[in-house]
Length: 540
Image 1 (cartoon, rainbow, N blue to C red):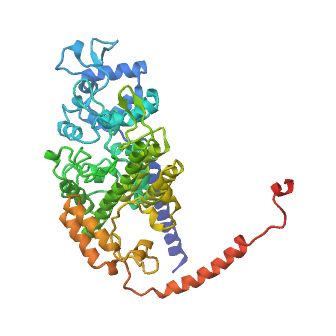
Image 2: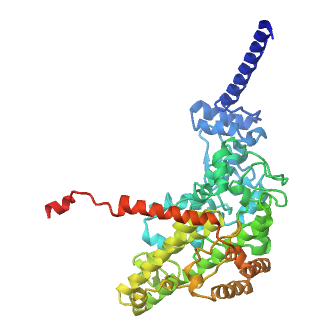
Image 3: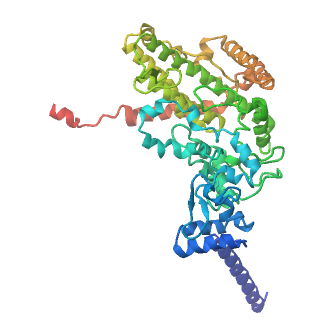
């Protein structure tokens, strides 16, 4: 190749490299460029409001937000949401005020009734969901005794007002998810929107989601996803892992879009007891119908046997929670009956109902948190693939709370508790009946070298568990399909538990290496004795 040709190739390669750099730079800078504004329609009436707000500097950012909305593209503006033409102007809204710059009466807070003029189906679905369920119907009265009402205003109510009942007869807060004026579907779909309320010690759903593989994928790739898509026609899921709405609301092949977040939930796992829902059963169907809806979403990504197995284990965790709950109720009732725990009383009404919660004495506090905090985390972690919340933030803390409660009873003279405290039998920690499942949803275990203590001391362990699972099925708490799946696992439990298989040879190597590590640990830490005394020893 002569020198001239080499120069030409170098120039071509340089130009190509430069073009590639320019393309990359353009794409990356696009992430920093202002979002392209859509072409919008502004009526004469809306133009008057917009120009006045901009001129006087009254909430001008809300105008910008609206200008980026689909409402603005379709010509839906200020007067369509804030003025009701069907009612005399002086009664335009329960919170009406006269615009100081015009003769128009304004409704300050558009309600779901206003939204229903265009979004009737969505509002009807929302109204029959637990999001819309009025908070005061199930909030125990203890909360009004235990904390000052002003704290509740900016505490409980900021989230629970998503079910606010309005004077016009409608219920809910659409803008709790669809942020005001832009009403973006992308904002409503972002898991952090749900995480505004679904977080913290009592229902850490955003934390559980981010811990899960679903959340891990979202954290890695979610910044590149366009969440502003439509699922009305049940298209294939356009993102590679689900966000909250994917499972609970969005449409997908085999499942229509819904604004009823209860439509796919087959267990009430936030209440003091887990139970199969009957909320609007005439319209939403049985718990099996609700589960089928959720499974149809999962099946877009997961194999059928995994979906069925995972949900069965999660359901068994819900049932197991009830047996743990029964322990807290038993001790609180007993301690109340023998006078060791006393009820608060206002007039003729007793607060701190021992079956629900309590505040002023240790057993009551433990029972409340065993439901409202640790018990929810145990159940919700099991349902949402949050292993750490099922384990360390859930069942492990529940077990500690049982010990603390019975210890308190023993210290206050309860004979049964004293006997329990003196016992050295490890089975004392299982003061409740058990559910179990051979193996797991991901494959078989290899438990021949780590069989749980109960498996060893109770030869009839699985027969006992089988009787409990069968009884739950007979009571309608498990489906026939779930019972048959459990039975299939039970018959092949030696396979699914890995008991029938030889220990891999590498385990022997691990044991030898562990011995070396143990010796190093003893030398470097356990038996290490520094030459100087502690400063406390010197002074005493």
